[in-house]
Length: 203
Length: 358
Image (cartoon, rainbow over all chains, first blue to last red; front, side, top):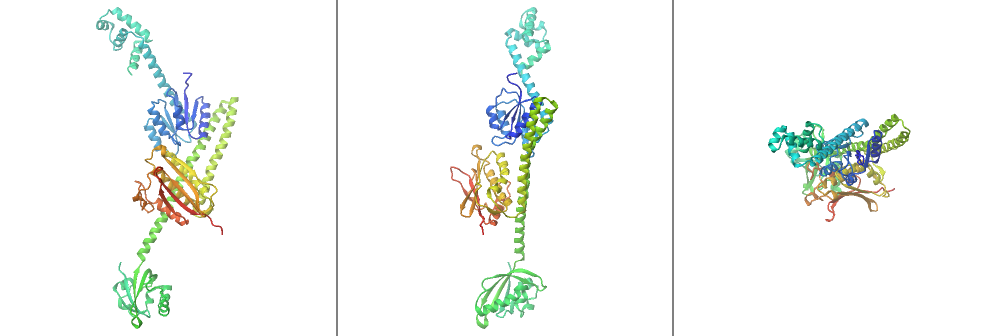
């Protein structure tokens, strides 16, 4: 997705912390976008974003925990990593219970932070991939005729062509033609592939 | 309480005593009859007592009679104890007698001393816990520049390893930032030092805005964590005060903490604490901490400053009692008022006299 590249969205009220994180991620070729408050971030937030959120738990105004809650209400799928201070462990625990991806304690080791962020990014990428895959399968399925959909349902249930022909009251040859069309339109490389697609459709 | 009763004649000779007197002083009652009253007094009071009687007879000026006095009393075994003595006069002329009622103050003294000791301990504990909290706040403040320094340094290492021409410029900028952040951390430590320097309980000539500034980060930590807007308006041009900075900080922090607690149920957009100071009389500074919380109920109003009174589920009820002790020890007052209904909440304040030049 070149128009919407994955980024680390850094939300921290401390300018020095934001700038130093930006430089650190630059050295490992990870793009960043920085925000000085939870409100500024929520104002800009777009559910089409990819990447992960690095969120300071303790900020003036809207706190990190509140930002996380509001993101949840808005259906956010970006993994959230909290930045916590020395005495913030109870808050961090609450954040984890609310579904945070992880938390790191300040001051953090760069490799540790980079690793966590990389994990979060790849988790988000996988989610993104499977989402795109699902949309692709749905689009292919929408191209099938009603008859082809019927045939596909029977095929993925493991029914033989002969049985399908009897069930649908058509010739076995017709079933074979429908079946070939289904495989072609669904861009399925094998029966197993088609079965996996049917599972994605039912998700 | 049982009291010892002693009847003496106008020369100070004991004529009659009750049984309690014997128990209190360690004599058999008949041992005392005929003795001078001085036998029951210790040290300076022994001599003084005879003088009082003589002077009263000559001048009519009362030193004990009808007034009551605290003396050191002496037992038969020579040990002494604090006692309150009240003397009444019966009869006149040759039949004039004095009746003394003596109360042993030992227990009362002990409980007073105990209370004083406990209060001092409480002040010490709260001072210690404040030092602990101060340390936590400083740790938090130090963490920011340290985090930035660690990040910049880590990035610099990576940039140098990459070794491109562009990266050198980035390394240079990062080093500049590291330098700035190190100074920032140094400033935090500088402030901690000046905080602990005044922690030995001595009073110095200082200014309220400087005293308050040291506690501001701690107060901010509390208000931040509770989504409270903190207004801090303490002018730098107020006259100097003579004060124990740590104790004054303790009052301010206590009042801010109370204000935070009072706004637990205040909607987030109304949560606001104002810390202000102004000159309210030619030689009086008043510092106010105003909240938008629940205010002080009529029932609480009468008791807020009493020790062990609290409206908080986990409160000790010592905060305001200690604050008032500190304010009074500085020659000031601690008080409060409920705000106008449209604002809501309460304003707690304390006054401090300004330094008077001799």
